[in-house]
Length: 482
Image 1: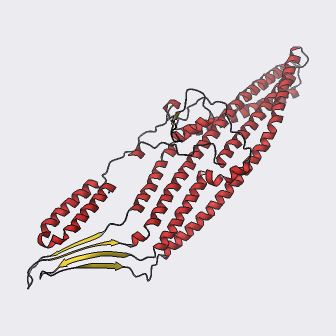
Image 2 (image 1 turned 45 degrees about the horizontal axis):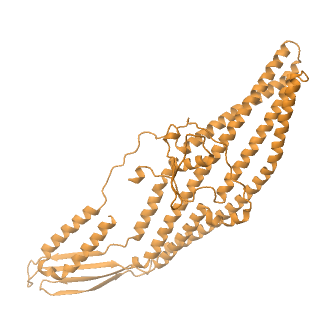
Image 3 (image 1 turned 180 degrees about the horizontal axis):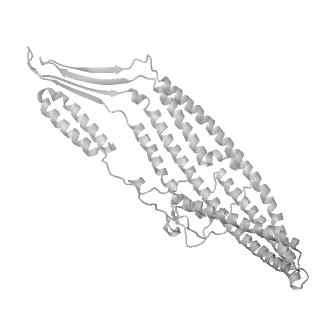
């Protein structure tokens, strides 16, 4: 029943108790009227069933225009921002689009609803227990029917009330932090996929160019071999290089298709949707890592969720210990017998804690608390170790970038010099192609290194609890709002 109906029922119940003093004179009429009113109140306040049919077809968007693009304001007084999908998208905007549109994230509102329902349940006290009795006079010395009425309330539930509500509230906050971490994971995965796709396109372009060069070289060498101007043994390595370039191109194409499909799935797009990705703007490496690592317990949503889960377990432990208080019903009763004699007085009903002293719940609460304590320590150690490892790897790769860029520039200069020499007939086609393919290989190595550095910087941001919204953004399904 809804809260308003519950309060109304309590008021009606109070009015019914006030009228007990006149029960002896007009109980049949008053009881029937009170029962009718109470039944009407309960029926009007209770929830009603509404059908919720399942979808018959997928709701994948054919393009970016079909996605939710408005990012809610995360700061007080700030205005929401709309992502412009008509231009090449930065990887950070792609991460936000994934958070807003990922089909799996839209179901997270159901998890929050379950947690909030648990809080509502924990906040409710047990209903008072009322009983009415009537015995008609059928014979004997009596002169009137007999009536009985009693009202009692479970007092034991009041003892554990605060602890139960605290545990439920901590659980709601834990679920909220866990769902925020899930959003971070989705956003991070989308950013990494967009980064890989961007550098994958550059690698594909260079590999296609390399395949054209090796194919032209092999074709010319084959013609020279057939004309008797080149030995047959010189053709074999050229054909092998052509086959390797073709195989590399196929592998890159397959990997690129898989990454596009994974990104489309995160965005809620059809698997053949494609869009332009802008050059990634990577976060700078941290100047001082130690202060950021020290703040991991305050920044990482998953670790905060474990802290809240432990708080809920602590409250559950207190509730289990308070639950040793036996079931205790306190109330009052009134009655009259067939001779017209009335009596009233308090009544107490309680369990004798001989066999069950809540040992099972206490043991379970202790084990749960120990488990969460160990899980928190393991997660924190893993987060700190992973962050330090990624930072060390990023520094090592970043130190290699200048040498890789210089090697790519040198190879490009050699290729240009070779083109000039070939134009003056100072080198043959095979030598020119070797210089050109070497320059392409150096460019591919540089792209691979830049891609690895970008992946590490994005991963380090998430490990340190940086770079993504501090509040949840995923919008609920329409069905979740009903």
